[in-house]
Length: 90
Picture 1 (cartoon, rainbow, N blue to C red):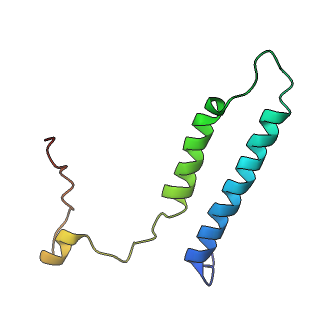
Picture 2 (picture 1 turned 90 degrees about the horizontal axis):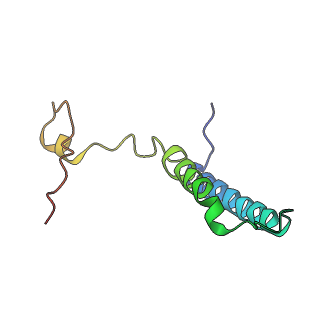
């Protein structure tokens, strides 16, 4: 798979265009919903919104920072893991 010459910009443009089209489709779906007794609402699209955000966030940007080393790996050249212990709750 060939990389786009300006990949970060291409990713941003893709995400913007996909969101624009999705919002347009969602608007059309609400306006043209045939069951007037149970109209579509914004809450009907929560799961779709979440999946789209996952697609545009995690998947679209996977491997984006693959060349960066974890902070603790800079101190220990032979570290086999990255410390991911969360901070304690206050």
